[in-house]
Length: 386
Image (cartoon, rainbow, N blue to C red; front, side, top):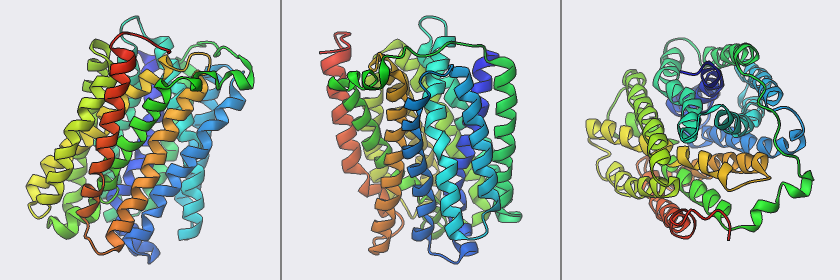
């Protein structure tokens, strides 16, 4: 594997633990902070909102070399997660989660641009998937490890490990990632010109609704598995490994397919496939091992939808790649924040921990519709603008 791409993936590994570890430790943190599970879900939303606010700040860094931006973001990941590990109470934890989310979207956004510049022709989508693969490895190893550490020691160790991984990312980028230049600076207003076309809005919409549709369920997978499916908390690390395999497989497979076929149709078909998966998660909630298999499929879809769209947005945001890269990350994490709120609301209405999966179905239908239209209007004829 290219050392430069591997170095970028170290950062997504750290961010993967920071984002996804919360799903496996939500119940434990609720007990530690003496809050309800639904209220503790706001920690997921706080992180996602940090991403949403942090990503647009890239516009003010557009004149910097891309490599320098990546180094700055790695440093911010270190600072934010150090604060998270030391947070003394629930309210400071909310602030810490917001701050630690600020560099997340920017890192993925700029990383996607850098990865494509490092890639050989015909392998740009795969290069982005390799950069993102650090997050899938985090879900495969880091998140189950975080769940285990939380159950047996403390959740603070988890976020200390994230801070350490961020420090290693900073060092690795400094050593292995070459200067790939800057983006073309067309001025502040020029960065927004690509938004006059419909294609990027279809990508953003497909991403938001797709993420939200699956994340409604995944935000509360911990209490679903332990309270409905009958698993003890001791099983959660192993189940999180299976979830991580799903993310890993979905990310790499969708990246390869997006290089071979149109990225929009790949993501649209995956979004469509997730509709019956969410329905089955609800229907079979009491059947533990069926839920484990569906967890694999659900997390594969979570990363399968998003991977090709991270590649595609750069193509449809010429002259404003930095804003496009920021926009796709805002879409991902705005979807995550909305999903945690929807799922928590459904639970608070007494509909049960399986109900968020059903709540996500209409959103997945909208996502698939937008992505199929994207393919029909733009990709099928290889048109980039109107």
